Length: 310
Ligand SMILES: O=C(O)CCC(=O)C(=O)O
Ligand SMILES: [Fe+2]
Image 1: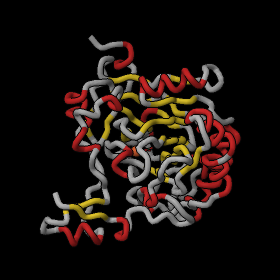
Image 2: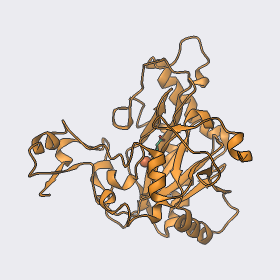
Image 3: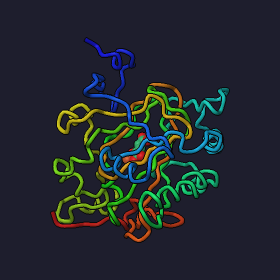
């Protein structure tokens, strides 16, 4: 018999694969209301859940200002459907804005910087981490129109050349209903490091120097994109846990999660661009991954490729 939850949900897909929406396979993230619990409780929660879903971390108006700035850039760059309200961010079929490294939005947008790197966030992380905090300088923009969401992965494989104790801050820059492709996380997967050992030991910019195609990896003509699985249902069967998302991520919300939590995003079945950013924080005293630091972080460029015998 269909449960009340699954019977009230539209079919949801990730990477084009329909999710099992029965209550033991799918659910919603646990809310954290900022200020309601002590930092010790929040730290325990991250240990248990791998994430914090901070409802209303900022006030809506403040985040709306950032959205306005980014939708105006999208408009100027010709990515929005002409004749539609800019704030609706309606996409043009077949015209993709670009993935994280190739995204044209302004990395130095002042309103965005103030939001994702400013005092409110920094003091949160300083208290959470228990010392002076720093952020990576690179901002990952997600501007996803109709179609598949982000592949399923753990962040560790992209950013583990410093400390592994890094936290992602995912910020919806607009309300994201279920059909617009919000963040999707596999419950309890941050505790599956034994099962994911081989995957988690990898680094997207490392390659086997003794393989025939080593030169292609060294120059970046070939690369492994860090995807853990293209099939969220098969992965769930292997690791257990429910796939979790929010019924409606809202302007002002934020999600913080650790480097080993398996996640991706739902497919977007609307014609509106789901706009979000993700950025990273860690203790300033710990080593940092040089790929993501500086005025123009180098990212995955060939000088950052590392060969090893495998
Ligand atoms: O927003 C998305 O589609 C993916 C986000 C993500 O992978 C992250 O925040 O680390
Ligand atoms: Fe990620």
